[in-house]
Image (cartoon, rainbow, N blue to C red; front, side, top):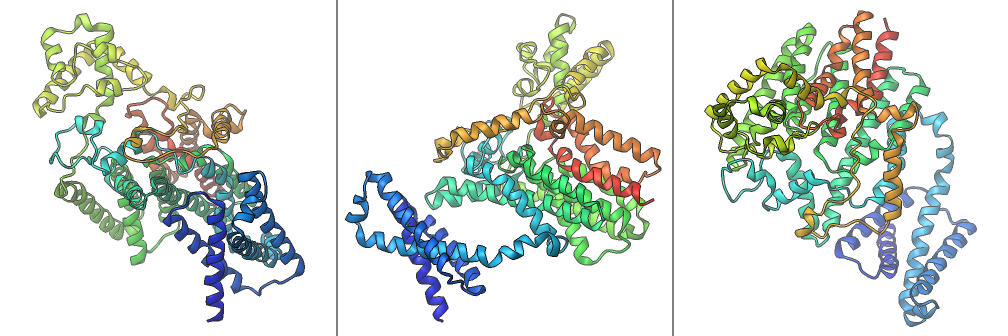
Amino acid sequence: MKKVICCILESILTITSFIYMKSKISFIDIFLYFIIFILLNVIYYKYKRNNHLLINLFSLFISFVMIIGKSFDATNSVNLISKNIILSITALIGYYSFYKMIISIIINNIDKFINYEEKYNKKHIFIFSLAVILLGWSIYIIAFYPGILSPDPSNQILQFFNVDTLYIDTVNLIDQSVKITNHHPVLHTVILGGLTKIGHTLGNDNLGIFMYTILQVLILSSVLAYTIKYLEKLNIPKKYLIAILLIYAFVPHFPFYAISLVKDTIYSSLIILYVICIFDLIYFKKNLKIKNEIFILLLILLISMFRNNGVYLIILTFPLLFIFNKDLRKKLITVFILFLVLSTSYTKILLPYFKITDGSIREALSVPFQQTARLAKYHGKNIEKSDKMIIDKVLTYDTLKDRYDPNIADPVKNEFNKDASKNDIMNYFKVWSKYLVKYPNVYVDSFINNTYGYFYPNTSNWYIYHKYDTRVTSILNYHYNDLSFLRKVLHKFGVLFRAIPVIGLISNIGFSTLLIMLLCVISIINKKKKFLIVLSPLLISILFCLVSPVNTYFRYALPYIFCVPLIINLMYYTLKNK
């Protein structure tokens, strides 16, 4: 009981000292401080309290530095202390208590830290890897607090707050009062918007956004740390594990996308787990327990719910597992059937029940729309008037040639007629097919122009998000901190990293694509055809890039770029263990 009272008193005193340092503080800040300091006390009292004289003196010294420093920063003198003598003494005691706890914890555990490699490397490799990754990312998390909102997640937050966005202009809403659509995955929108709403309710919008940022950071970093733990179980050489850990911690696209609140980050994390799951099922699993089946079902459901094309990835890859794994065929077929039932129920029953409108069909038609636009640009005079009228019912024809951009389909898609009927769409494809026969070179050129960057290593649209999007500032007080110089340095490093010889290829889209294709070739030559099943989610991800609206868009390639360090080592294991 005495320890509990001391713990609470010390926490209150420490909170007082932190309030002393800040001119403005909210209730949520006080609450978070209290939780943190309670946890510190628990850790502190778990070990024997260290009352060494030097610890006490050093803690007292830092406390005086904080109090005096605050006063001089505010008044250029000790006037702040003299005018608030009781508060200053209380803050001094609080600081002393806080720093004594921190220093004691470090001193009491320093031997364990030094001997970590020798004693705990394998046993705690996950925790060690996670700590290193988070340490490497910490500067990005601090610099870009509360997180990077680009256009897509900004619009998702607006949707959650029931504000009109551009997405409602592309569809006919089921209910005009429900502004959320399934253009972006509803699950991601609800989590992102819901956590933002919590912060908004508490009076701190940045806190709500930061809650999602931390959730996403923990998901991605934990998955990456797990890949190292998994590879260690496969007896992958330690030097390779260290190399992977350094890539995860310090190659900039990992931390940048960890704090960029796009749907692709969590989706890519799930794809990594899916690749490991496939590898396990193909090479090791001869039996599955109920908990394994539930985990697999949950994983593939989440993949389908965090990206709309995720359902097609599962449909195209999961059947390979029960085709080539006879031992688990019945159980895997059962899991797949349950997946189809649940995913269909989610999109066709649950979302419509809540009046959430599905996304526009235009999102799946980037390739033919671009081909038609290129045809109009270069051979518009040869298109029959009746055919132009048919195209106009789907895509506004008069401005079609001017809207054509060979690297991005959005300007063309933006004029899609949401009221076009199924018959209009069918007639459009008849016209599309007609001119495919007449001008096949135009269609091929259009396709290549919109996709070559996914193979060609010497071009890249980097697309590291670093600017905060102002769309949400109309309803939220979202803003960065004052570390603008640090953000510029980190962004510059991110942009320049890909130019570093050899190492920069880690962040090269074309190189990653070609590398995965090379692994396919190696698998076939070495008669490791089962490994193609392991590669199948990455190959399908590449295919999705080819039908996407943007050429060389980094976040579209994120699922297989994130997987490269893992998949190379899985290939190494497969070749080594003949």
